[in-house]
Structures are given as C-alpha cells and as structure tokens.
Amino acid sequence: MQTDLLARGRKVLAEQSFSAMLGTQLDAFAPGVAQLSLPVTPKLLQQDGFVHGGVLAYLADNALTYAGGSVLGKVLTSEFKINYLRPAKDAARLVAVASVVGNGKSQAVCRCEIYLESGDERKLCAAAQGTIRKAD
Image (cartoon, rainbow, N blue to C red; front, side, top):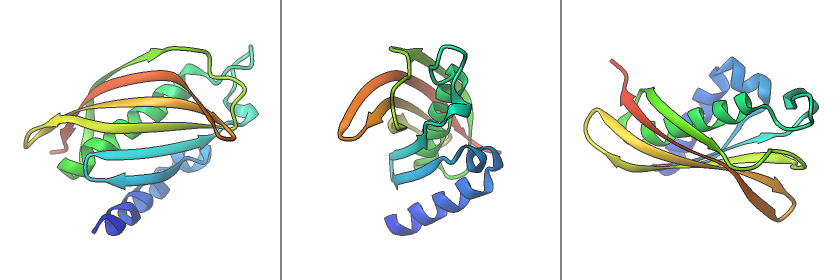
C-alpha cells in the first residue's frame, strides 16, 4: 500500500508543471510523512548566491501538503509559516522532510524541516509549520 501511495504521489508531482520545471522529486511518502528534494541550480539563486527564499517556501509548502494529504486525501494549504535559519548556499540539493503533528477529519497540522545537502552532510536551513485542510 505504501508503494501505491508513493507512486500516486509521484504522479501528482509530475502533474505540477512548476515542480517539474524545478526538478523536484518525491523521495518518500507514507502515512503522516513526506520527503521532497530539489537540486540546487544557478537559476534558483538570488544576487548574493543564496537559494531564493521563495524556493524554500515553495518546497516547505509542497512538503507540508504532501504530509497532510497522506492522511486526508486531496488537500490545500490553509496557512503556513517559515523560519529561515541560515542562508541556503553551498549545497547540491535541498531536502524537505515533513510530518503530521496532529490531524482530524478535515485538517492536519504539519511541520517541515529543510536541509542543505552536500555529500553525506546535512545542515538545517529552514523550518516551517502549517495547517493543511481537506479540499472541498
């Protein structure tokens, strides 16, 4: 069943043209958890060589909705907040790990950590929390 969930999640991601353009991948997807990754390319950098904050926010939002969707089905983001903890630089890829903190029938509160990854090293660069609601 979890293999089916991952396959469905990857199909949905492939249908998101913005995600496809960025090269986002769904690495893990199971009830209550999701992991997405994104290769860092020069097009994602702002003028000082850091990954643009909007890219981090996109990745957090998508990871949060995947985590919430894993327990609720088709969902939308109701709200989310992100804290940028360090500049996103000198990394090969970004990895967003999201999990459900708690959920009911129509909404889930989820959290997400975004890591800079280079080789075997991971550094936390952002943390987010959001409310994900079942789509009408």
